[in-house]
Image (cartoon, rainbow, N blue to C red; front, top):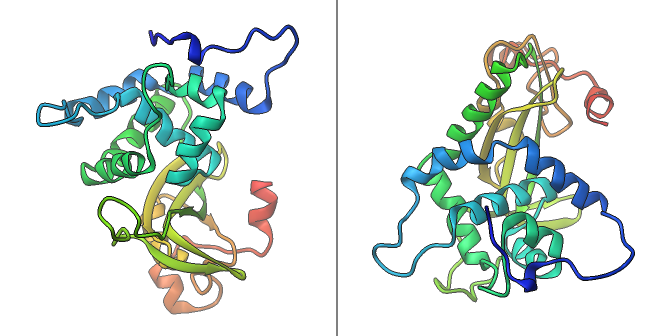
Length: 253
């Protein structure tokens, strides 16, 4: 059990109620297989034998999940931890003992997961758990992507931008960072596939990596042009893909 100092405790206010975010975090505390996921990662996690001890694995894993749930960039996650007592309690960050992990540490953890291909291993653990409870992936997949913003500044330790991140434009706004591509079961709503790319990579190019192979239909928005419809070459490349106008909004809304 995580121990916290008084600096991490809630204030002694007489009146109050939990926010929507706090209720969500309480639910995730119970639902997510924290012990199992840590078991997948821990054998590979640095022990700090050569240099400064790393930030605790449980803290970094929970921050990683917060980034996905609340669409937080690396600097955004660091700032949110200082701003929100609820997020600190959830992650186990105790400002009475140590500062919150900085954006460089948060970025390094994500790269470390990618290097050891642990994202897929964690997803497999979750899917195996769901199947053991009788929750199975069906024959329809919804695909989508989201931009994970990162600082474009070179004012960091390496004095350079991350070479795996690139610039892209969405509407009239420019972004620098990565893009997370997600495949979701159309019936249960469970994520069954996740992959990343530079933000400049078009969503349609990542489509094959998001399909589990048993789909009869795949729904995507306007970012996946030419992957279905009447074009015979595209149908041959992705025979399970179907793109009915407006259906993504109906299913995801």
